[in-house]
Length: 481
Image (cartoon, rainbow, N blue to C red; front, top):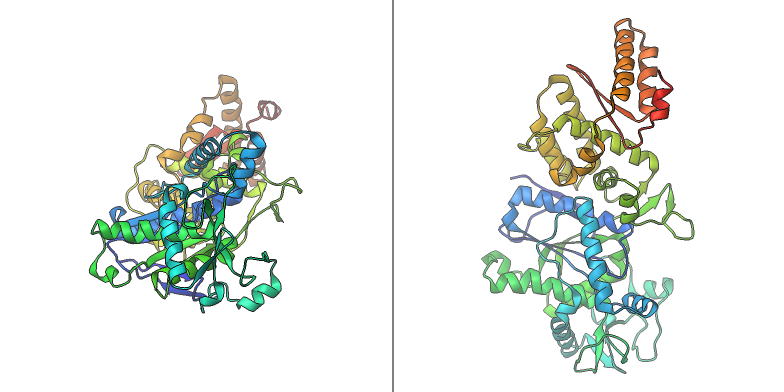
């Protein structure tokens, strides 16, 4: 069986991935807070962990992987949006949840096995908080319940900081009801205008961190245990699952707090075996910011005509543990590459992915190396006229060249008019003559001119084929006659 290596944030080492139960590999990834459109940075963890999900399914089998990604649908940002808009919270969260699903489908993300909404798991959160209080790890105060951070000796291990250093270097809320400035909220009171649920501490709502602890335990331990889907080996490690993922911005305090809650409530040494974090996103070398005018959502790009497959390709061109810089140049290059590859695999069925691609992805999701491998496979197809099925299957493992993401290619590949065909074919005849005469300067000039006009060329051993790109400019082509 293929050995997958992953960089474990918890140990700061690249380790062989050994699942607790190969018959049910379990992964939890923190999902969005649903109050607005997903911005481009929100798409990165979705795409990264979608590739890992695809790899795990390939190695262990689709029926032996459980992937959970949550929706936070109770949050102060949602409350504020409802107050601003005059719309109900339920209406906002339902709409934005569907927006998120639609946008992530547009960039080729498979839906996880479970997509829990926080509001459906309030009883589980209340029960976990009660357990934490009973064990001395939490305390009620003025309608709140707070986690007693110093009761968990390992707090800070994931982020590599001590509690005292965190206090010195961070802005923490110093509330009069806190025993310690670092203690964080598990439950908070709700007024009449704010969503709330009955609890032993009064009407209120959960803190952010407790949501994931409760939902992960319910869906990755209690549910498979009750359905008898866990092996005897897995039962020896109660409440522990394989992989927890998310953006680097969640490492502290969100994931640090999750670990503390889960381990203290469940009496375990760990919450998850492997912790993976993707780096952040920039735009043209700068942090994405509304004040800089470089902030945009996934839907903004889609509405501008950028195919979801192109967004995905650009994201995967950078290793997930490195900052990713979205640039217009990368977008253009990605579109050209994908057009070439889709020309090569048009109307073909995928077979089995190439070992080189599997090896690259198994090396801590080295997607840039995998894309280099796809380039090599594409060149081999162009050279030999065979190998389409391997290229397509290999790309599919990264979520590329899938049939679901192919609409953009079909839609823009419209049949050109007779006049356009006459001009292009005439220029190609001149280019062929120049190449035979070894006048490569003229040959390259014609190709560059056609490219500038928005005409896509594909050269193979059988000859040249062409099609029109979305940026086709008839005036520029006319000027080349």
